[in-house]
Image 1 (cartoon, rainbow, N blue to C red):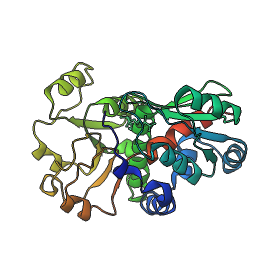
Image 2: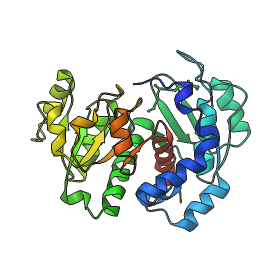
Image 3: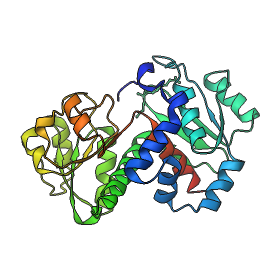
Image 4: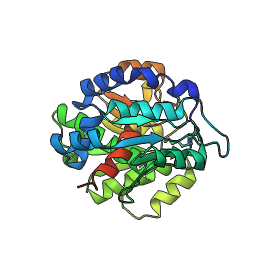
Length: 277
Ligand code: 2YJ
């Protein structure tokens, strides 16, 4: 799993309005809209949750320690969705304790291995790998719909069978969405083949050209050169750092959605909201 860097995320603390309006321009939803659409939450229900629920983002010093502004970014993302949020001054267990005293209903926190949110009210939780996979599949579905395509009738290319890619594979299989797989890593391909899905695995990146709809879960950065991509591409990727090279990023600017934390975080909250009365 990629360790986030401060410079990849610190724009979020005051850039969420811009983020949400750009997202809405590409998929028709801001983060709150994406969550409501994914989990079938009405506007009224959502607004009730947003007015009642206090959300804490607790800094965690374990392992490699605090990433400057990580908790502030989580707080900014959730605030941009209409919720009241705070970051306690204390860290770790003391931070959780003080968040409880402040009456936080949902607590977000991450160490080097896991990024989790949980509800104190009913024990529900959102886990980042799964939530990110689901979020990006929903982003692709929404982008496709706006462009006149139905995700259940087209073939998607999934790139990367890592921690998030694996979750995406399961979600796509469960929803009967057709897809092929590309991973340059032989072990990841072997793990995918062992699922015996019967899905096609690309033999080389040159074949990426044959796909219009690409979900990219790799985290190497800069490897997906414009030359690998076809003429018309819809692209969604939580990969940090971004796979697209500069030319591809510029060419796909209206049909590519990628971010470092926002969609996964929003969907983690959604996983909790969907369980609330
Ligand atoms: O509280 C802090 O500032 C740190 N303990 C945050 C650690 C953040 N964790 C990571 O960057 C992990 N690699 C997980 C990131 C998940 C993004 N998909």
